[in-house]
Length: 196
Image (tube, rainbow, N blue to C red):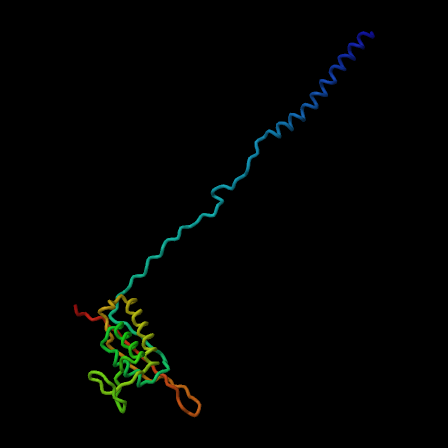
């Protein structure tokens, strides 16, 4: 009997470490399998990225050619008389030529013809005249604006001439002592000549 018991005990003793090994081995295998799993990085799909929309270029506006160009000076602080004579001085001239002539007036090298009791000036066919410097400077700015309008209207600058210029009184504000300030509306027109 003792032999049978000892054999049974030996069998049990032998079985215990095997069971313990199996128990210990099982979680180790799990952890080992867990560690060896490949790490997958979740990258955002291509569809998630904001799509850059390609903007279509808007067509350039077509330039509609016009026959004439206009420049308007509103309430210019100039003498009406000076504006009248400068308008007559630049009439029938090309815009660049008129600007060059007024620059010569500013330098006292050219005279704007005036009528009335005005001192006589030297020059071919010149009776009397003045050097309206302030008015000439403001007319140059007005003529540069006219030149821009000519180009925008699709006209040929070389064939364009000043055909009309007028000066009219604007509303004149009161000054101290009952005097009125000088204010003048100026209108200049240029037209492309059709002569070849």
